[in-house]
Image 1 (cartoon, rainbow, N blue to C red):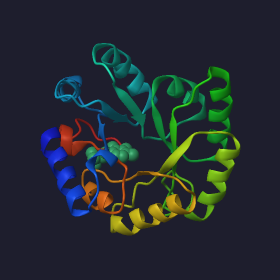
Image 2: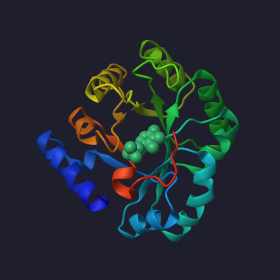
Image 3: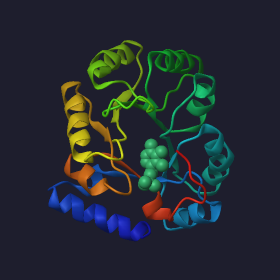
Image 4: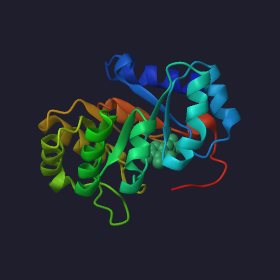
Length: 219
Ligand SMILES: *Cc1c(COP(=O)(O)O)cnc(C)c1O
């Protein structure tokens, strides 16, 4: 495993799907990884990373951003409204816009600071009670609401239930994106990014397959 190997697998999946690899953004998920591992991937030239906690991102990325040019950080984990401002000042994209209260807060802060990261609406495609995300049946209405707030919604994101075939969820997410005129599809992780690419993923979030197992477990 490692960055080179993952890039080769992305290229192969794109060839199989008759897609241009330039249309698939690899987000290297660096949450809970030791800084040496993250730095090694930066040294290899990779520049797009994913974190799932604002606190953790704030602890490591300002320094890396100073030392390496062109770094982009994507927040892929749940966002509390009281951390919205800090997140918006820190990251380049948020993949977890999942409820009206958060959308309203993002819109207000965007007005105040005059900027907003790229946003993805997280859809709970498996309707799992413990999982974040807007329900599929409510996705269209919520996306409309976000647009009415002038939020820069670029796409939709999902995390399929672990025990189900991910393809069904990727297909559902793509349908939601298509009927809402959204180009961005954030889907696919270490175990299933090739399938996600076959279903049109534009952003894949790959952690352990690049960095190795996370040092301590995190949900
Ligand atoms: C941790 C995480 C990933 C990466 O998971 P891996 O299985 O290590 O590739 C992707 N997306 C989200 C939302 C995550 O929290």
